[in-house]
Image (cartoon, rainbow, N blue to C red; front, side, top):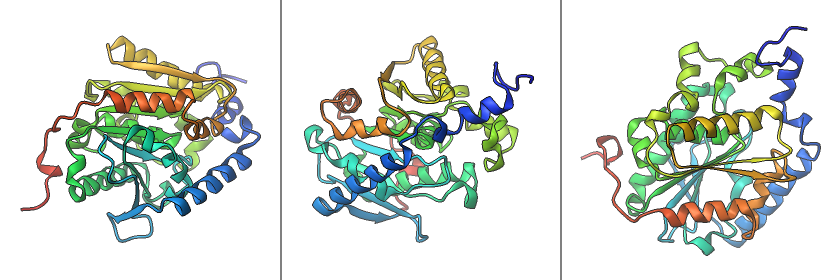
Length: 296
């Protein structure tokens, strides 16, 4: 059979974008996310902010009175599943680094499309910063996992608005997608309906010039699918060639889902990477653009 992308046949490319083929314990790992998050919510209930009135318009904020930089985390789920309640476990060790954590919900791709998803996570962040103005001058760490890492990278490269991109102090991107071309050649095309122009705009690899000077950590598991490993390594290579402050973190013996559980362990390399990003922030007032300001 002929190759459809690099050396992949169609079947191979489809498999390379199907995480269930590479993570045999996926269901158990997602159940662990849910159990750990339920325990965390019972121990430290989050503040809940509404940025829209629909069912997916809420933001959980943990450790909200902490004085460190804001960590804004976007969850994964192949753009079509998951919700903020599954990721509360990320708040477990925030007291160690003194940072508030915000985890928003947002509509799924099947209901609004991918460009509108990016717009929603951007508007959620604007609403939170308008509501909690004290966060504005502390630095912003954009973080995300899987499709959430893609959304976070889109925000960092300007797809959610220049005002958002200018706010970003650092990024922790875990097991993400940064180039939409091979995604749209795979079976995911069945639910990722974008134009060629939209696909390019939503490929962070194509918009590195929009990134600020902050550090970017790209993490992935050694047992990820080959395409998710390649995407991280290629994004890192291009970032380095553009003299960006990028650090690669390969987490051994972790797949696409078990890697995120490393954030529950303060001794893990992934948690230490997040702590290092937070520690690198300088407490200086970020530019306040007109879009970020509350109405007169």
